[in-house]
Image 1 (cartoon, helix red, strand yellow):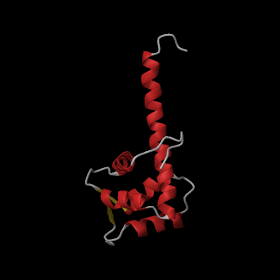
Image 2 (image 1 turned 90 degrees about the horizontal axis):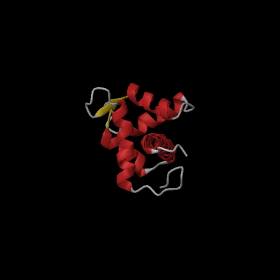
Image 3 (image 1 turned 60 degrees about the vertical axis):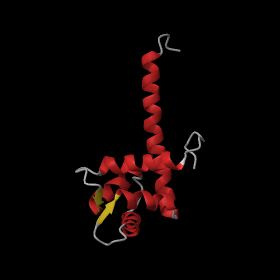
Image 4 (image 1 turned 90 degrees about the vertical axis):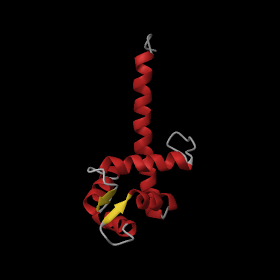
Length: 116
């Protein structure tokens, strides 16, 4: 898999990025997301996702049917890569890549003394 800049992303980095997105929405730090939190994940990543698409994502993710999705289930669903999951993965790569690019620019600007 490659990011928007065409840089190859290894599976470890990919798993870490997916985990970062999961953790951002795991408000209580319990290691799982309920359907409401999952809806927030998908609406944040893809504002154009329909309710039907999001419900489908949630159904595919909640293998146990308990309404809770663990980080492992979330990562596995995305890495295994159905068509839906690949679409979400692209958004995660863009989201985490954009955040990384901003961080790099901020650090660079602190050390760029001649502002060129």
